[in-house]
Image (tube, rainbow, N blue to C red):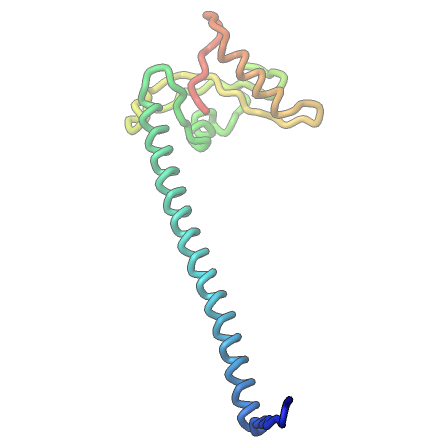
Length: 159
């Protein structure tokens, strides 16, 4: 049988236990801070990557739009300030008539060499908001006018 057991248990001193607890907390704290810092660095890198891609895409798109404006028959971009000036701030003497969504004005737009647009006389429709009328209806009217071809209807040139 069993003659006897010699079991020895050594207890750590309270100071040694406190040091081990401090080391454990320090390891946990460093692990958490390291994880947070790593996650933040990865998020910043991803944000930078997508931001630079977006900027490059936007620049390419703007360049494409400028190139397309030079093509014959394509709509050209006209600054509102140019239209306002050409219609004499939408003066009544320049008014040709009124329609469902606003008034139509006559004006002469100066040439824009940077876009290749020549000087031209145009009719400008100033959109007027009305509670009964929706913007979608206005766009539908513009779409219909754009498809029409008649000697008394001027083609759409701006956007």
